[in-house]
Image (cartoon, rainbow, N blue to C red; front, side):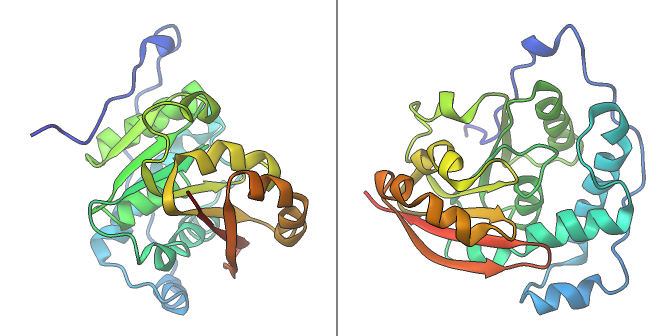
Amino acid sequence: MTPRYKPLAMSTLAARPLPALPSVPPLPPPSDFGARLAELGVSLPAETLERVGAYLALLLAMNEQLNLTAITDPEGAWTRHALDAFALVPLLAQVPAGGRLLDVGSGGGVPGLVLAIARPDLQVTLIEATQKKAAFLEAVVKALGLEWVSVLAERAEQLATTSLARSFDVVTARAVAKLAQLLPWTAPFARRGGALLLVKGARADAELDEARRVLARFRCQHERTVQTPTGRVVVLTVGG
């Protein structure tokens, strides 16, 4: 059987290899985290939360060296990263087991890596152009045994015309760019009828209005905008 996991090509990182991941215990979730998940309509097993806690611990431990996130406290990591990503889980309900998810501009791993842990039945690909961040993602994938996750250290626009085009059920992105700029980096990867889940802030409506022509060019239909604990998710479907 051909493995779904494709190792990241590390040749470009040879001159400055990633420091070894430290041995750190998982971050325990805040006491009210289960209740906050329930408010989102999300229920996850303890093993999933422990794995996310292990990822968050590595994220914070490596942050000073790699500048992975502006969030530096454990509770903030659980809220701004984990809870925010888990808010997308109900939006993945229609994606069947074996479906494909692409996260563009994964950075330190949100939301793509968190969603991969929450939905281990999906094939997840993370695109991150910054080499040190991509190397960190690859190291976490190996450390946590996420064999269903692959990491590509490339720019999305360079991959949009490859075999990855039109091959994903859902494409996600958070804090990458304004919608008008983000759509050419995400829409080409979604299959016909696939979804774009784009995590935005308070200007989501304004960005949608500014992106009307780009939406039409990529045949994207705005389905709804979903409020999350820390922002808003613009949900688009992609036509043929």
